[in-house]
Structure formats: C-alpha cells, structure tokens
Amino acid sequence: MPTPDYDPQNIFAKILRGEMPCHKIFEDDVALAFMDIFPRADGHALVIPKTPARGFLDMPPDALGPYMARVQKVAAAVKSGMNADGLTIQQFNESAGGQVVFHLHFHILPRREGVALRPPGAGDKASIEAHAEKIRRAIEAL
Ligand code: AMP
Image (cartoon, rainbow, N blue to C red; front, side, top):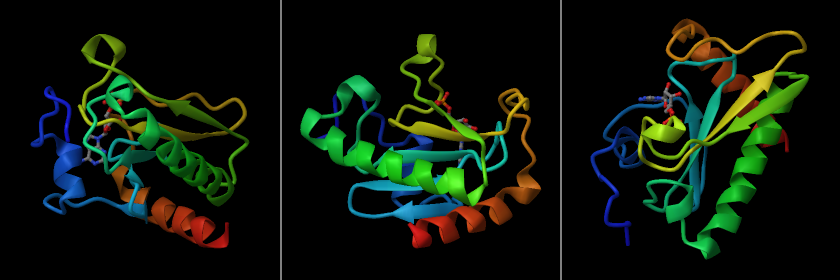
C-alpha cells in the first residue's frame, strides 16, 4: 500500500506505469533504473523502487534491503560502463532536503577526478541514450 502522502501522479509513478518514456537501463520485480533527463554528470542514472514510497523514511524496512541491492548493482554498472574514477550517490527527502520528485530515488553520478558536477537542469540531453547503452552493456556483463 502507498503511504498516505504518496501522489500516484508523480512523474516517476507515470514512468513506472509506462505512461511516460524513459531511457531504461535496468528493471526487475523490485526496481527500475533509468537515465536522469537533466544529467549533472555524463551517465547520471536514477534507481527507483517499485514500492510506492514518497521518500527514504516511507520505505518498508523489509523492502529496503532488496532495493538497496539494486541500487548497488546499478551503481557498479554505472561506474564500469562509464569508466568512472568514482561515484557520488545522492538521495533527497522533501523540498527542504532538495527533493523535487516525490517517489523515492537514488541518484548515481559517475565522477572523474577534478571534474565538478553540472548545475541541476544543465545537462546535455543528446548524449543520454549513448551513455544508457554503455551502462546497459555493463549491467549485462556484471
Ligand atoms: P530530486 O527529486 O531532487 O532527487 O531530483 C529529481 C531528479 O529527477 C532530477 O535530477 C531531474 O533531473 C530528474 N527528472 C525529472 N523528470 C525526469 C524524467 N521525466 N526522466 C528522468 N529524470 C527526470
């Protein structure tokens, strides 16, 4: 059951239901991963649970472990597929915490030594699909 303050019309719920497109990189019964449409780094990916949770504190504890295993799996593929030096993994809760889309998600940001993150909303959309394909291949190789 969704938590009472979960809005089933949020963008990620629509992506989960197939009502909005995404550059999908991974899906199973627990989670869906796709590319962030405004990438703050090349290869910026999001991992969302299929459980309708608004934020981290709303996720049932028994569903959290399986979800985090998927976050880790996608993170490994983002790092190897993008040949990154490191990763930044972020998760925001409520507007005060920087959350904009109210369905739980983790950001996976591949990082290169000395390269700063781009500001929110400033990414290059044209290369997203090429990066998605690199990450898909890395997931298959895990
Ligand atoms: P936040 O809720 O602050 O963690 O940020 C939500 C993230 O979702 C931002 O990085 C947006 O660029 C990203 N985003 C918003 N709409 C979409 C979409 N339709 N497909 C992929 N990413 C999105």
